[in-house]
Image (cartoon, rainbow, N blue to C red; front, top):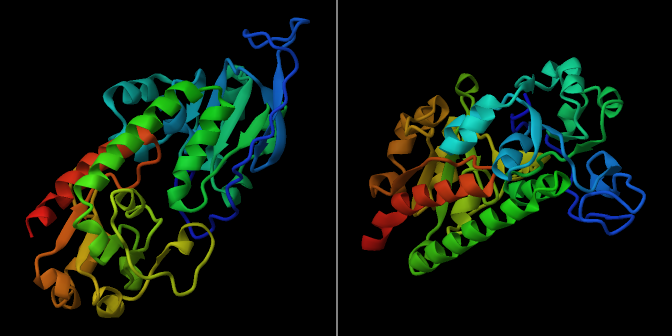
Length: 331
């Protein structure tokens, strides 16, 4: 799937942009009337793209980012998992835009993309998933920049690069500024509480059939935004792997005591509607869970909107975190 955060997420997110321009016109054209271009460093190399794209196709993680940034989109992939985190306006735009790909990279509709007549294609999928896409075929349609996820917390850099490629930095920058100001205010609110606590987190992707639960450490989906408020998730992955496996692991249920015995507070992922995912419920139904010190002390906290991948979505996560952590101020 475009959106799955699998153990195969690999590579380091390139943070530098090599920019070249020809001419100084503000209409995206040089003095000869030709479209200006620049060289953009993406996961698939240094790609020559328009300075001011006018017709953009986006897939995967680029979909919510570029909708929120107001990019000139003419086609997107399906992104159902992100719908609950979209605001009303963004959700309306998402539903209206032509779907030129499904949830899976293999469901790319090359004819539909060609009919959309893009001047830029932004692919927001993990590097291993890129192999399921015929990039050369897409390159025959328009310049292609692959800007896919690595570790979960990299959504900040990822969304910046995707917005930059699409020429949509103005709205993106405004959203980032709003988020950072709000996060700073909440960090001040909780400065006497959160930094002094040892937190653990149960993620939503344990495998019940295999008898495992997911423990997320700092920098993972369920933890990285809470860290902006001063939350400290202790420990580290025993055997780090690529991508999300660098910041989360999947112990057997018997390892619950060892995983969270030291935790002052245990947070856990819930769906946007507050429901508890089956893998989390599996851990919480265990007798071993009920004997954990934090559980006995009543210090377990559900966290929603843990998979925000844009600054606008992350602002909603901040609201959820503020409500969730508020009781800690009275203890």
